[in-house]
Amino acid sequence: MRQFLLIIFLLAITCMSSFSQRFEGGLLGGLNGSQVDGDSYKGYHKAGLVLGGFAQTDISRNVFVSMELKFAQKGSRNIDSTAAYGQIKYVMRLNYAEMPVYLGIRTGEKVSFLVGVSPGYLISGAEYNDYGKFPPEDQHPFNAFDLEAMVGFRFQVSKRLFIDMRGAYSILPIRQITDGMQLYYWRDNQFNNVLNTTVLYRLDF
Image 1: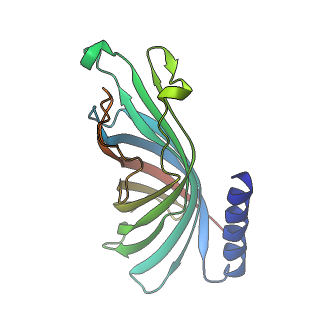
Image 2 (image 1 turned 30 degrees about the vertical axis):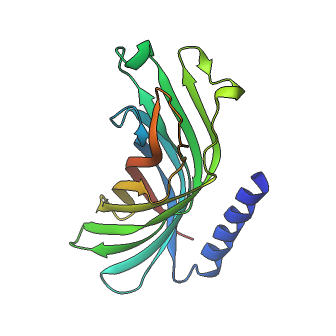
């Protein structure tokens, strides 16, 4: 898995260097507010970090395309002390390596509309309750691959600084329920549902 991530990173850097005359790029960081549709809870209660880099190029005066390579934390968190069956705590922690690809449309001097897809590779996934991490016999694996549709807006703060606000939702289930399975925290096929705020800083190559 580490070798896979290293190869992807090196390919991204090579592409950015090869097209440095046409592309601009930089660093990004921010926060996810996430939930998982298909569990027994509601609300974007699971906070997570987002860190990585981006590259983009204009294809016309008002349209650009962009690609990112980033680490993103997602999952689900129950904060209701009156949860079903007396369970107070439930936390799902998912860590992804993601490579979003999207189209940007400049709708004004400082605002752009974003639409695209975000494939992701699951680095790790774990669940916790009042007694700690689920024991091996209670663990149910997540799908290694996630594919999300995303939409959002970008606001230009200065020549180098931008703020993105996005929503993303899994097109494919991150985990499927099997017939006859009855668990207090899991009621249907599960999908990542994420709200994201990211700061992007443009660098000169």
